[in-house]
Each structure stands twice: as C-alpha cells, then as structure tokens.
Length: 166
Image (cartoon, rainbow, N blue to C red; front, side, top):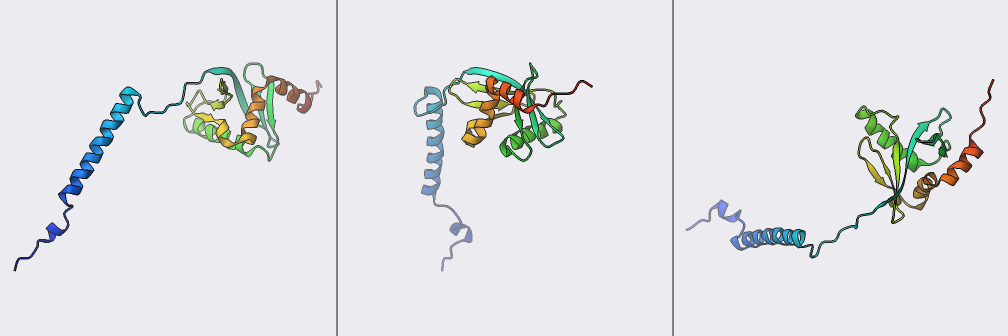
C-alpha cells in the first residue's frame, strides 16, 4: 500500500501558485504603466493659496479661547467656555504635538484659504495641515469667521471689555 506523505497534503497546487504570481506581476506592471503614462490615474489638481492669516490661540482663565491675529494683535475670534469642541480638539491636538517636540507655543498657526474655497489650519512648526472642510459646515464656519477680517473687528468691539487705566 502506498501511503501519501503528510507534506503532500499541505502543499498548495502549482496552478494556484502560478496564478498568484501572475496576479502580483500584472499588478506591478499596471501600476508602473499608470505611474509613468498617467493613464488610469486620478489626481487632485494643485490648489493655489488665496489668503493666509497667522493666528495665536490663547487659553483664558474663564475657559474661553482667544484667537488673535499674530501680525496686528486684532481679535479674530473668541470661543466661549463650553463651546467650539471641534476648534478646541484641533488646537489642543496640535499643541500637544508642539509640547512633545518642545516647540514654543508663541509660534503662530496659519489659516490658509485656497482658491477652491477650502480652508486649512497649518502648523508651520510641526508641518501639520488640517483640511477643515472635511469636518462639516458648522466646524468649518468657525474658521471661516476667523479669516474674515470684518467679522474680527466686530468681535473685537463687541466682546473685549475696555481695560481701565487706573
């Protein structure tokens, strides 16, 4: 009686191995073809910057966040205590990275408006770039108001109490 070896039962049939190798080779060839010719490859067109605004974010004792223009010192936005969870989350996440890398919190963040209407908050110190429109219109709208200088002037007049000169 001939008895089959246990190792013969564990082997993958040769036609299956050839088919797998052919699939891998075809994938590599088609990927290289697409990369070098551009056929079948989709890409996002380059966007151009329309405007930028460098901003500083300061946590205040009352729990609010004061956002000021780094160049002029003008108020760009005030996030009242208990509001703007998305803004707080984004900025605290980037601030945490800065702290771990021992980068000064005094370096401003850059709000970038692209020609296609999109906004990004960029941290020049760490290279982080958050595409804000991906998080919904309410979250996006907070940053739109920071870019709008007229709104910032209204915020400045309406929310910042005058300091006494005693």
